[in-house]
Length: 210
Image (cartoon, rainbow, N blue to C red; front, side, top):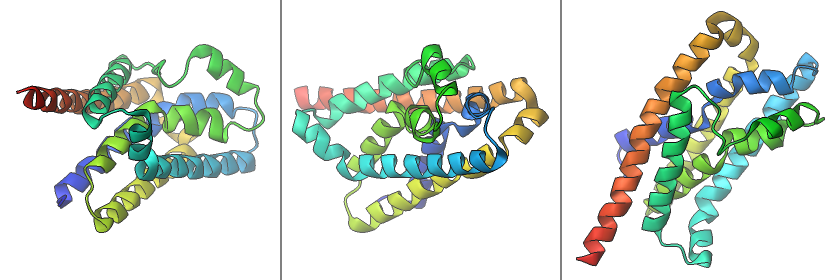
């Protein structure tokens, strides 16, 4: 049975991986030509898409792993490596190439609707977020825990709303340096979480081998 501290840990892990603060520069770039009303609609659609993607990962992720014959420990190590790569980029205040690259960002600027692609996926609910949700859901053993986990996903997704709504004000007040500092701090925590996933997966392998 997961305790309150575990749920807090899950929330802050998801928030760090979603990293809405780090998405602000790209959001401002891809919505530069949109009216204020359209930006609000884009943000709402983005949050809904993130929520749906993460909930699907939570409820169907383990079935997908079983279908492809991937054991949980292998996925835990792979997910940890993926998060570690993302965290290294965040520590350098860069957008991870795991999420998107310059060509994809440039293409997004020309799109009419950027809410689902690239904002929701892969910038926010990318491979790192999806794999982490699957790993957390694998440790859940009851309907009550899954309900609480779903609420945590909801709250983490909704936390994107005020940050993107105030993206211009945040960008103007704290500037590029402030955004980079926030990204680096979350990257540090994410690196520690990544190492934990890799260690746990490797440890289980060693125990099974012995």
